[in-house]
Amino acid sequence: MMRPKIKTTIPYFVLDKEIQIGEELGVACFIDDPTGSVALLVQSLNGEHDTEQIFEIVSSEYPDISKQDVLDAIQQIDELGFLEDGNIQPQDLTPYLTERYKANLNYFSLFTDLSTSKFEIQEKINRAKISLIGIGGLGSQILYHLSAIGFHNIKALDYDRLELSNFNRQLLYSESDIGELKTGLAQKRIAQFNPNVNLQIINKKIEGSKDVLDHIQGADLVICVADKPTMFIRKWVNEAVVQAGIPMISGGVLNTRGRFFSIVPGTTGCIQCAQEHNELLNPKQKQQLENMKNISYNRQNATISSNVGMLAGIMVNEAIKHITGIAEPYSLGRACEINFVDYTISEVSSWDKADTCSVCSALATQR
Image (cartoon, rainbow, N blue to C red; front, side, top):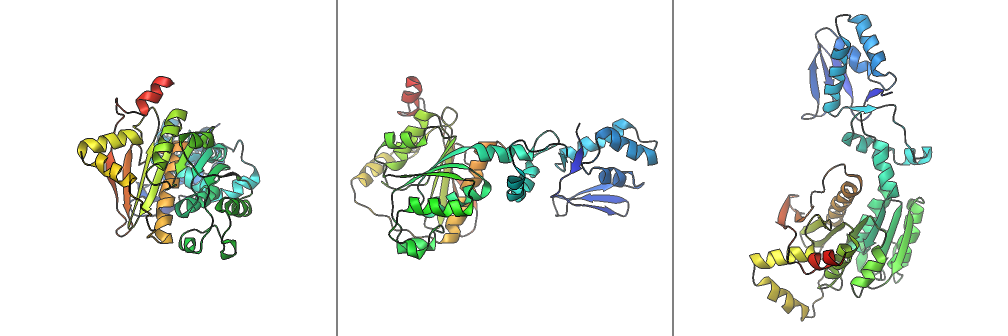
């Protein structure tokens, strides 16, 4: 039976003729309590009593209060987001994992109510299969975040070797590792950091959509932060995720900005849909892209670790939303941008599925 409990992350205070639940301005709720009955009710919401017992506790001192009054009050407090069910226990989390991810669970409790479980959110993360393409500056920080949060099944692909110039933003490695393959170094470091993570590494340079498709098979989510070959990598990844029907988050750092977006095949438009949409808005774009394909261009990195970390954190939060459903991904079907100077996030463009899309339409027909 349900045992309502004020969430451990939310303190309450018994004041003079009122109760304060929560401590931050704009979040805290103040409830009038001229008789002290609300204080007794709130103090009884400790996860040790079911609703019948709570009513008995309150009515023993305040006999004019009905059972329905107590149930209505509990419902109102639950609707404010302050309650969880103290009777819900983890299904798959061991005591060790429950302690390791204790702060995660406290955070996830903020997205639950009496009918949902913070443990289930963490368990979904533990079970999810993530395909990460690229473990350079952005990818290595994303990998660290994924491992810390408890994504236990990750397959990572890269082919680069570690260079001295990587260290201003790539935090997995040591200078003694210079010249080594990033994939092997990442696997070793993550095993030390969180031994619960099954990190499979693929040391391979992507040369077409088939390479991507082979890598992402069986994944629940693809995160693409590879940037080479510049004009082709996202095209290949897009074709693969649409064919496989796997959601994808992608992003990258460009000087003082970080851009990110996510697509869900069959629900949102894909990258090709976005390109066709943008070409309608800017007829010159198609020719501009064609011109760039024929120019040998090696973009120079211009970023700092803290900026990369901001974008990595945002993208991993989007991954959590995709996997757990605690909220809709902010970047779903639209390109968003964080300005690293003033910290604003804005929408750059959004797009729907295009009926004429050469990727969505063709592959949907094949399936």
